[in-house]
Length: 165
Image 1 (cartoon, rainbow, N blue to C red):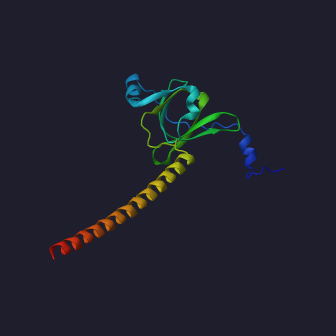
Image 2: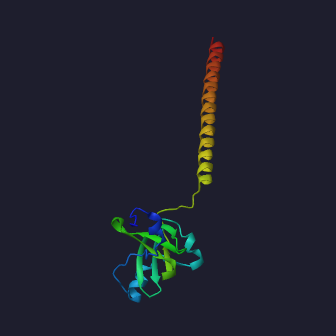
């Protein structure tokens, strides 16, 4: 029987190393300190809660410090292992298994805030619609008051004409 090269299920069952090997770089403590200037250490139990889009750096269990990149996803593979999917410049990306990492840091400053949920967005939209309706009512009231003021001015002018005649 020939092997079906299009059988994706067979590929999924293979135990693969999903991590792309990169040049090994052992940073000096000074290099590491500079690279972590605006980063905070994340407790292991909070790794799942790091927001997608955060800039992360990590240290492997081997002691290798990796400058990392932008967290694009947190994956669970068929082998039940969790992975960070990380993107760096020019589309270069890789995955690294949680169990191969000793420490993770995330940037104090994030370009992306994924904590805004649909309920919050809908609440904001409702607030905007309410503000628009209030402004429309105030505009109508301002026009009504302006017209009333003009009528009062006309009445005063007519009264002055009668008194002067």
